Image 1 (spheres, helix red, strand yellow):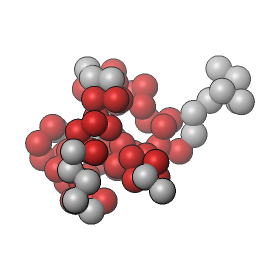
Image 2 (cartoon, one colour; image 1 turned 120 degrees about the vertical axis):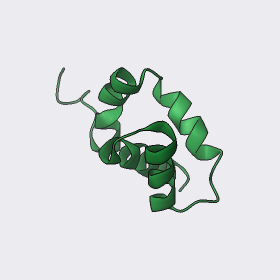
Image 3 (tube, helix red, strand yellow; image 1 turned 90 degrees about the horizontal axis):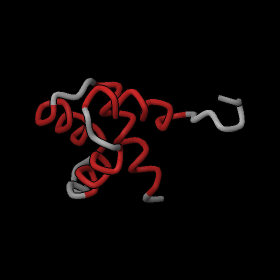
Image 4 (cartoon, helix red, strand yellow; image 1 turned 90 degrees about the vertical axis):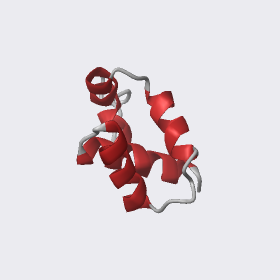
Length: 70
């Protein structure tokens, strides 16, 4: 993949998240958006406890979602 097309930041985790958890990123983004009353680390903890997600993957999804809200 060329450097211009390579994902950076939280989005760089998306391919491995999709592969490991078997759901497209849109699935996880929709879930996080349904819990928008929670703070960043609360969302990370929720993804970890309810969906068995690792900390780095959960953090990447939450950071991406919250950045999109700005």
